[in-house]
Length: 151
Image 1 (cartoon, rainbow, N blue to C red):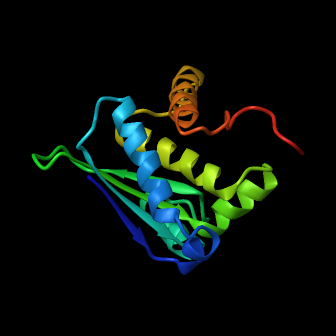
Image 2: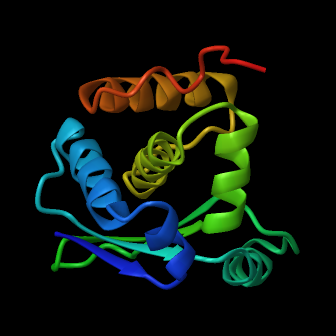
């Protein structure tokens, strides 16, 4: 089950269908890994909240686009939480010449893959994760987020 909380109203202003977009991306990612029915909570928040979470849990005093918080194994089949920062995501989308909707769905897929145990510490891990992201996004009709785009 995918739960969505929109904490920063900027998300709903910029993307009136933000809840549907993130739920669709999370569910597609879970389905791609055979994890249908696993629980995920998505928080659409602001840069300050992400900065505080990043400082508290990763000792990095700066906002970032997405943070994933895996849950300990539990009988409720809850994988964990994902938080996304509006300002950082919107700036990245604009800088990369992508729609905010597509960038958001990419970051949700990325975050869900982290909850499923994937990482990108090594080049091999990054390549595997990027391939999985590409496949999920292609299924949603979204172009390869790693392809060179307009500058």
